[in-house]
Length: 294
Image 1: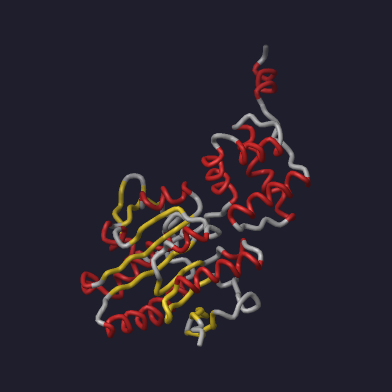
Image 2 (image 1 turned 120 degrees about the vertical axis):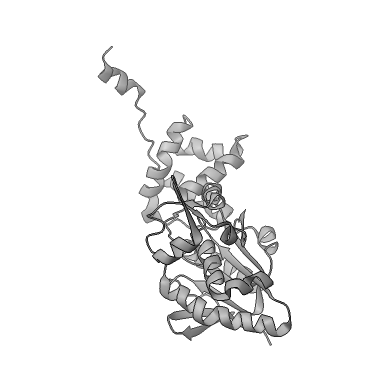
């Protein structure tokens, strides 16, 4: 048999997804994660998951849905599904105007309030942290602002994501030059250690961040997150429909301390969704503050 004939026999055709299968899979993903996948992204689902079906030797998306629901490996496969359907394109010091707002306005305000209480405690939640660039960036900014006085503070940045794959990368703390493309050279020199495989985040930065798996649709798990002074959830709720956005924003409201702030992505507006946050205009952009119920 020729090599060409052998290749034809071993090549598996990527399964196509029917409208019915897409709807069933979409409903399953929404029920589990709150992520809403519009019909126009049907082909992306087909492309991203088609290869996975081949790896599992499944003939159709109907078989894959049954595998997700009933297989002994369903929990592990659900984690794999989350990796495939989420986008994790990020970098250090992304959206610098917003981070400057955080550094120059919000952070000094919160730090001063905490100092006046006599309790130098700061809690930040990075919800949807991907591979760690955002929470590590926040930790670097804290070092830049507090300098040596950071020793006297009890600081914890809780960083969560739904994907075990990106969390494993975050915990490793090793990054390439592309991920650092928006990072000032002096910051790289101060807070990263050059290695043969890339740039490793400095241990003094890493120790401020605690990573964990979290589904924002899991009410019980979300309630276990420590109460926060500041929440970052940028470019995450754009994947939710209005009902799920409202649910997640309520989670954030309940988690935030009374004077706490919420940072969302530039393209994310919540005014028509809920009134539990008020927008605060600062130099560099808008941040949301918890509206205290009276």
